Amino acid sequence: MVKIGILTRNPEAWCSMNLIKAFEKLGAEPVCLRFSRLVAKVGIKPAVLHEDIDVLKELGAVVIRPIGRGSLDECIFRMDILHRLTRLGFPVINHPSAIEKCIDKFYALTILEEHNIPVPRTVVTENAKEALKAFHELGGDVVIKPLFGSRGVGITRVSDPEIATRIFRALQFTHNVLYIQEFIPHGTRDIRAFVVNEEVIASMYREGKSWKTNVAQGAIPKALKLMEEAEEIAIKAAKIVGCEIAGVDILEGPNGLRVVEINSQPGWRGIQTVTKVNIAEAIAKYVIEKAKK
Ligand SMILES: Nc1ncnc2c1ncn2[C@@H]1O[C@H](COP(=O)(O)OP(=O)(O)O)[C@@H](O)[C@H]1O
Ligand SMILES: [Mg+2]
Image (cartoon, rainbow, N blue to C red):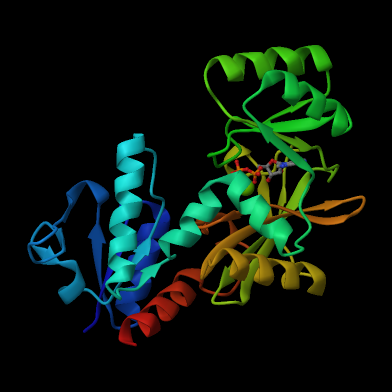
């Protein structure tokens, strides 16, 4: 029986439990792993241990659930271990290079733009004065986002230049990078497309109470049969950044669709409520196939 590692902060989280069940149902043995218990060795075998498990020998693949917050050391070390595993021919899903591209909103957006995926106009700088210029250049109605962030936390909409100035100065003072994006009027909903292996297996509208439409911010999942254009964009976007599993966020603006981000470790608790497709099983099936190759 193939053993699959699920690298997660919280094995009891809904998605982890769901995934564990799916692997068991499909005849694989799930093993929960934590970054804090991994040991990497150089010049000594085995190269990667998790407690007493030799990851390369005993497991067929590892799925990455949210990597979580950590110090710079921890984050870099975690990515280093994942890269080491992939270099040694071990399947890590998503591939660490895909995760790196997506957790950094600037990195992701530049790659998407370079491949002609429509994205909002965005300016990124460390300089508060330049940020204020960008505020005007972007039409005086912008969203300011943390470079690394999720669940809508820390994102603010600003349309007053004085408030913008204060925010930019404060963020510069605390050495944050200023990520400033044109506000895309999208009513109070956006599209989340869930991609597995170059296919949109589920999609939803997220209906928010305001412009921020993260489920974590109170938005409600609504069933959606994805239009062809959005489907193509979502598949292409996931492929370009190298995500085998992805949650693609798309806004419907007055000038068409805009991809705002790609989640490389997406949850599916919300979207699962509006689709008949068993998302955990689709993920598990894909990972087991990869593990067997
Ligand atoms: N440029 C934008 N214009 C309007 N709304 C936006 C814009 N960017 C993000 N949003 C809203 O904020 C939410 C969170 O933004 P997103 O970039 O996906 O960051 P997070 O990683 O926090 O989910 C989006 O789902 C959308 O509702
Ligand atoms: Mg998002």
